[in-house]
Image (tube, rainbow, N blue to C red):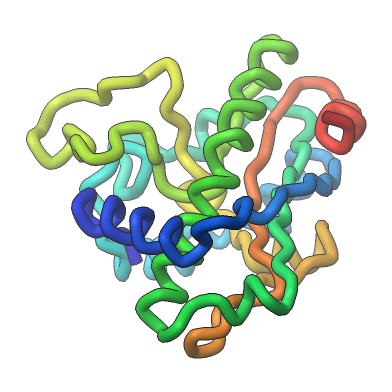
Length: 219
């Protein structure tokens, strides 16, 4: 579920303390490409996915999360292709067992994912600029406002409309199936205080023309 800004800050501080003296795990990218229409037909299950969103604390509190005034899928109409991008953060045995308890594991997981998300989001926005008219979808809830919190709760417009994007799941796409079937990486979760062997973040880029995998697999 989504964390409040103060909870996020505390989680990140705790996680970096847990990993003190070591580098945060590195990220690699794997991708898949398919016709946009095929992805919409096979992997979109908006009603079911929104029920999961309703259970999250960010539902209705962040502009990038549902409910939306208009159908987010309308923005994706007319695209020819989607490049699915998976950011994979692999942990070794020592890193997986570093948290002392479930609370520390949750804090570490949050910080690891956020650490991987920021450069991934930046690369997606750069890809949008390279591919005219394309549309990026991020891997999870918006991170831009940080401690200040999204202005949606105050009935005010987004602070960063040029950089904010919604996510695949917010549009109703089944990210678990996407990761397993298209990227070959089932989503993994912590087991008690033990972190998973890897974290997978799944985003996407809708484009008019097919894009090259090398944009992501080569830094």
